[in-house]
Image (tube, rainbow, N blue to C red; front, side, top):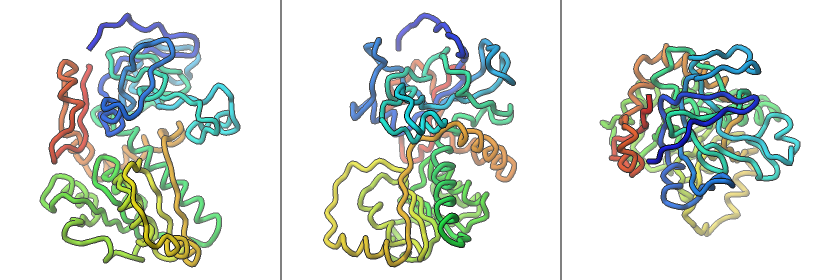
Length: 341
C-alpha cells in the first residue's frame, strides 16, 4: 500500500474513480514473479486489470460519457509501431508484441482509488451491473473465443453447433457456461469440485450439466462435442481436449500452460486433426468490441438467471487487507474483489 498524487488526465484521457477490482490468476502470477513489467518511469507496477469505475471528470472528446457514468476500461493498448492489427483496433492481435497492458505490462493498473484511462478505451455499463461489472473483463476472454471459433467454422463449411464442453469451473469457466447457454447450446462443464460445491450449483443454475472429473474421466467424453473450451491451464488436460470434439469440431484454448508433457503418440493428434476437419484455436486478451458485446450479454444473464453473477463474487476485501486478498483463496473461492469505493 502506498500513497500517490492524484493522477492528472492528459488529452483524450478520463479520470476514473475505481469502485472494485477483480483478482485473478494473472495477478497472483505477477505477485509470484512469473511476469509483470512496470512502466518505464516507475520502480513498481500498480496491479488490477479487471475493474469497474465511475467517470470522475468528463472529457469533451468522449461522446456519450459524463461524470458519474459507470464504465469498464479495457486492458490492452496498441503498439507504438502501429502494426496492421493495432491500426485496425485489434490490439489483442498485435503483431509486434510491443503492446502495453494496464496492471500487467508497462501501464499501471486500476487497483487504486483514482486512475486514468484513454477515453476511447472505456465501455459504458448500465447501472444494474454496478455490483458485477468487474466480471466483464474475464467474460470478454470467452466472448472472443466463441465469436472467433464460430466465424472460422462457419466460413469454411455449413456448421450448426449444438453442444459444448467447458473444461474448468473457475470464473471464466462459469461465465463461458452461461454465455454458451445464452447461445442455445447444450453445455457440460467439467471440474474437480464436488457436485455439491458452489461452482457446481452455479453451473447447474444456467441449465448446464456439471461433471466431477474425479468421477467421470474425460476419456469417456471423446467425440461428443461441437465446441470445447479449455480453461484449466493444465497441459495434460489441453492435450486430452483434442479428442473430445466431433468431426468438424473446434477447441478453443484460453489458458496458460506451464507444465510440460511428452506425448507418446503425437502423430495421432495430428491425424485426428486432419481426418476430422478439426480446428485448434488459441486466444488471449480482447479488444473493445468484445467488451461492448459482453456488457450486453451480462445484462441478458442478469435477467435470465437473477443472482447468478452476484453469487460469483465470493469475497470482497478492503484495500488495507491486500496481502490476504492476493494470496490464494479457499476451495469455494470463485471471484475475490478489492473494494475501493
